[in-house]
Length: 295
Image (cartoon, rainbow, N blue to C red; front, side, top):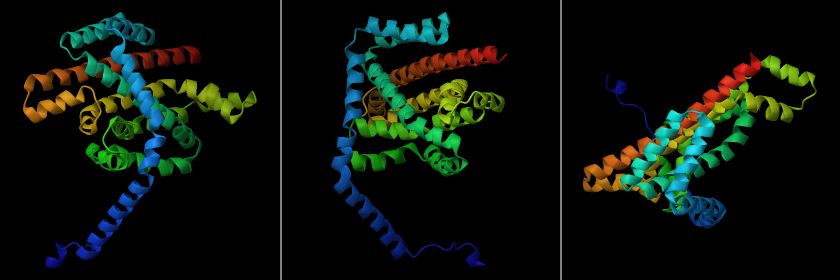
């Protein structure tokens, strides 16, 4: 009966040889193309640095006013605006303003990058079942892979710094946006698409003028989830050089600074609530508008 409990596996020497070959191939690739990859991501680094510089060097009343205006335009809800202002004032009062601005700039760049990378993929997925069947397993792996694992190849390729951390965050956060946007485009009413065909719309015109506008509420839900997952990755990304609220939390863990960790953790929660309430309110407004138009 022992054979029932002895699962067949690869010979230890062959397994070690396989792992060694893969590791060596990755090291060779890193040595050969690492510099080229760093040069490729230079524009992204410039964008992130400029965004961070704007958020940290702009006077705090201007930043709070700007965020309040954005919250109002998106939500048309004074409670959300007041909550956003109160949260930011409390963050500043507790001396976490600079780290919070660095985190917000990182989330902003991460969201922009996720949209730029995700839109071409989701358009391909929405138009082809074959492409969807190929991409879906990749998204499954990206969503279930432990977040620490993303740091390994990124750090080996690009080293320690802001850009590697940002790329790791984007890889972790992008799947919900792709999935939800693809779903939103596929769920557009067929009668509406037939009407667009009757008016002689091309496939690109249907996508731009019909499918994407009608899928906007679902797209906003995907962006909301991307932002939430990016914020959840902030502390882990701080391990490889991403500045912001994650670094004080990491420092608190290493040195047992209870209040430092709790305050910065609550600041992350506060920023997450602001992003969540504003984006959700905007999505609900889009949904109501669509119901009125089609009602």
